[in-house]
Length: 351
Image 1 (cartoon, one colour):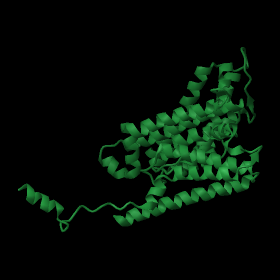
Image 2 (cartoon, rainbow, N blue to C red; image 1 turned 180 degrees about the vertical axis):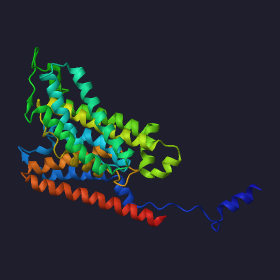
Image 3 (cartoon, rainbow, N blue to C red; image 1 turned 180 degrees about the horizontal axis):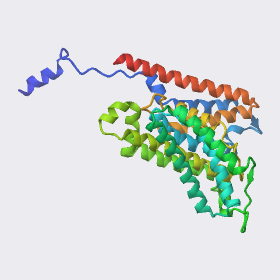
Image 4 (cartoon, rainbow, N blue to C red; image 1 turned 45 degrees about the vertical axis):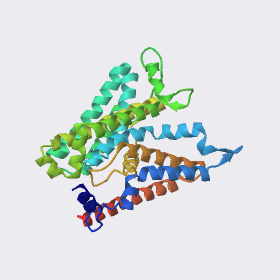
């Protein structure tokens, strides 16, 4: 009996389970941010100016400047990832950063509030702003694009009112009109003056967001809503609450970035954060998060953020004009979106 079994198992005529063909394009899209980051790093090494034989791109101070420069947009991009996975968008994040920087500076300088009350108040403000936008979008079934575009204008207007259209400079010390000296740590570097504090905030926030997205029920709900909202609703997923929650997260992220911004540059301005929403969206898309919803990762977003920062740094080291930098970024965004569209089309045909 055992011999017969061996013969049957070894018989080449017996049908075997079909092997699933791996689509190379899908793999490229899945790891596009990491591939792009490696390519940009290689390009940076090749095209970097030299000084006394040293590759300036690899200089530790230059690397620290890259990660410091992308910390604020990276924090926003982490929040934006939640929204885009649900097939939404948030155009108000840059304006909320500006509002948060103004409120942070105003509370400490004009209001005389301490560090902890200021930070808590600004973070709560960002969360409430996001909840309002998410509620309006879901309750009245309005496109997030329209709602958050209006939110952008509202946040800028509030920032202008609070600041009186003036820079609010932050000076440190004890007494009226001075901010707590500990707040200045956001503009400093730790570990032998190498790692910017803003970067540490970015990394911690990214780590927490990764755990939430990958290990919690809420994270599974986010993917479910973006993958198929109707099926998620039938399955008992609280779709409206999930949508409101992801906008609350972007509001929180924008407020956190605004606090970091005020601490790094020692002022608050209603114009802070202009264009940050586009950079954050670019980092998320380049990081492999699908604009159609249902797919994405925090690791990809972090890699996409650093990639954009490294690319901008390479161009700056070679004295390339800002206009060319914008064109290069635009080309990368279009390429990432095209690749996503091609993969989605292939998968659709495969069904």
